[in-house]
Image (cartoon, rainbow, N blue to C red):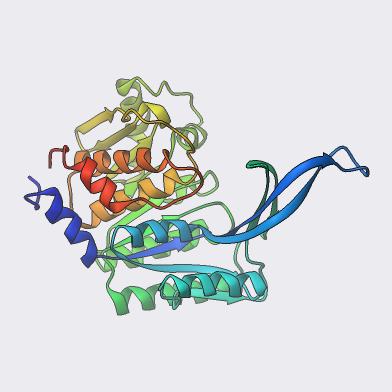
Length: 332
């Protein structure tokens, strides 16, 4: 039984939520230009740059989606004490995002992914990053910032946004999950390969199919709900995960909560770009988790949101109004 009598009431409730997003943040930089000749120095195109652009990426894109849904995001991460780190903090400030959970460290560089776009096609990506684990001092300081944030803001949910860039490790994850459980704060996870098995006792675990295959070291037929149930049930029980949700690309999403499990088919879309869809899915699912919606409703709304952003080119946040309009047909 849903605590909300209508989609409107549900979407209005998002505005009252506070969300902590902890994980790997980065700057997505773009060089846009025109290509009309090949370099005489090497067989590569020459890009005449006419626009430079920087955007918040990684865990910060999840925060942008949280904000787009009307909730209040609090980012918690470690970045470099460098020019790119200052740029990232400036972009956060421009969006009205609090930065008390951010730690700048001279021992790291801020992750920057630079994409070179020529004639509207990506030609090259250059990654500037350090993916080593945080030092013990950095881990202790990040944990201190997180617990301070939990006590000061009393968030409704915490999201682990893991990109395998070194901010999260098994020890830190365990301490953060314990801190949340001690305060009755639900936890949601968007995992990557390295820490896949480190997220124990979390409320919601959301890998995509490729991550699930790599994490469980098994091949899976994404259209076979019984096989999905069979191969994930032991993992879910062993890890003490309340709700498991697996995004299956064009096949939709699979969810499992107790004895309730199903594949929810994807909605028919004109797919333009899948970039950032996972960020949108975990954002919407986590907000629903905070509102204590049942797993089937949470998964249905997140599935709908992920499909909507795939109709847009590039990494864009969810359009709340459009999502609400399409969600009106869902059964709460």
